[in-house]
Image (tube, rainbow, N blue to C red; front, side):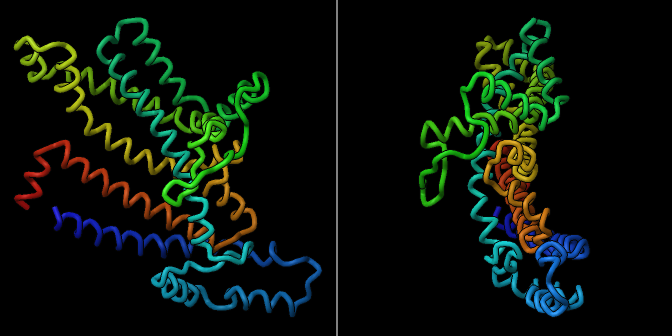
Length: 325
């Protein structure tokens, strides 16, 4: 297991190095932030001083080498707009995005697996058909439209929930979170629901398909023939065997929830990384854009590693294979 982890970490380092080059060239070769950051009334001397101060007067390859040298020391450059370290700015917004992503993923898992089991065990019943129809709607409806409808219904018409912001935060192990207060939870419900809808539909359909396939397997038929209760057959023999693909999807989709929470954070003015990257793109704040993308890539790498480790806990064959390797 230790050799497997070391090998994966080395692969992750190579992926991160390649992505840093790709992201740097892609972001730094597009647009000129000086045109946005400097006043139109500035003279050529002011423009030249600003370009030199931002390091944009050097060739692109030289800028990248400087970036790599600073990145190895934990410095991804200073924000053009805020004049503070870009990594610090991104990490300050990370807890808000992680809180939203965890809430959305938790909602999708807690509702998706039971609903998918029901639909898989009783596909011809009207609740099963209703669940599967609802999952199709979850795939089809655009996230931005659902978010606006949630605001119109629950914030404007009914006035039950706030439509924007994060609400009051409290420190939990030094990290600001909003779910420790009722007002914070009220602010979290609408954006988390909007972000969870697509993932909920995905988990429902995956669980339903896995359940229907598992019920046809010999080990399930043998368990029923032994006289085991239906709850034990479903809970032990069916659910445990379909969890592996479900965990794969949940792990990968959690990374996508973090990366693509941009729309939800913009609609609900949630102060996370997604809203930050939109604001940074508007002013071509290159260091913040690069820092954001590298943080997202690092999170994907860590999530994939966690999923692989979870495999070994759920499937003994993987532990055996790792031991033989």
